[in-house]
Length: 333
Image (cartoon, rainbow, N blue to C red; front, side, top):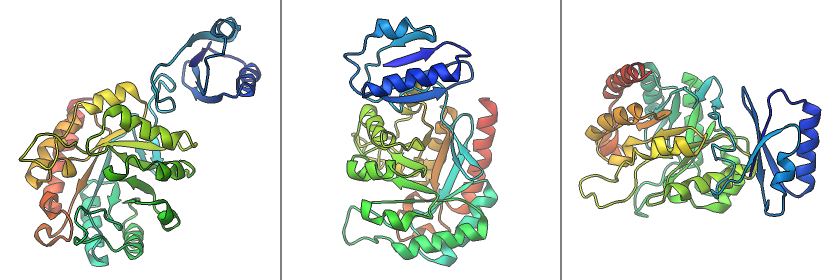
C-alpha cells in the first residue's frame, strides 16, 4: 500500500502518521520527492482501514500495490534512485562506464588495463578475484590476492573498483571494495542477498541465467528489505534457443525495468554475447534504449586471457566504442 501526502505537509504531522503506522507493525518506506512525499507501507496491510487513512487532512491518496516487490517499486519511489560511488553517480540521468578484465591475473596486467580504460572514459574498474566457472578445472581466480591487486590498481588510477562476491563467508574480504557484484548464478542465493542488505555498499545485481523480470526484482527486494537501497540492476542476457551466441541480450528488459522500478539499470553486452565483435553493436543498442551504464570486459591480450578472452575487447577497441557511445548519448538527449 502507498500513502501519498499532500504538498507542504508539516514534518511533525508526517512523523505522527509514520509513528502510528509503525505501531501497527508496518514498515514505512519514505520517499520524499520534489513535489510530493510517498509512504510505502510494507507488511500485512489487509486490516488497515484505507478510508480512515485517506480521510486524514495531510493525505492526498491511498492505493494498494499488487506487485510482490515493494522497496524497489516505482510506485513506492517515483523518482529515479541515484547510486553514488565516490564521485561516480549511477542512475537518474548519470551514465556509468564500468570496464576491465574478467579476471585479475597480475598486478602489471590490471594496472595497465585500468590506465587504458580510464583514459578511454571508464569511471569504474571491474576485475574478478573469485570466479564461478562452469568447469571445476578452469581458472577460479586469485581470491584474496586478486582483491589486493585490484586495490593497488585503484590507488594507481583513482578508479573505484567492483568485484564479484560468491558467498557470505567472504564478506569481510570485500570490506574495502567499492561495489559488490552478485553474479547471475547467485541471483537467488537468498542468504547472500540478505547479508548484503545489511551493508551500506552499492550492490550490482545481475539477472539470472533464465530468470523472469519479476524474479529479478524480487532478488533486489531481498537486499533492499534489509535496509540497503544502493542496488544496481544488470541485464546480462538470458538462456534461450540461440545457438550462435552465448546468451540472448534482452534489451526490452531495460525500459520495462525502468517502468517497474526506480533502480538504475545497466547492461553487460560481454556476457550476453560471448563474442568480442558482437559487444560494440549491443553496447550501442543498450545505450540507445536507455541503459544507465555499461559493464564491458577489456583485456590487453585476449587470446591469452585466463578467463573469457573471446568476449573481451582490446583497450584500443574499447576507446573507439566509448566515442560512439558518447555520440549516441548526445543524440538521444
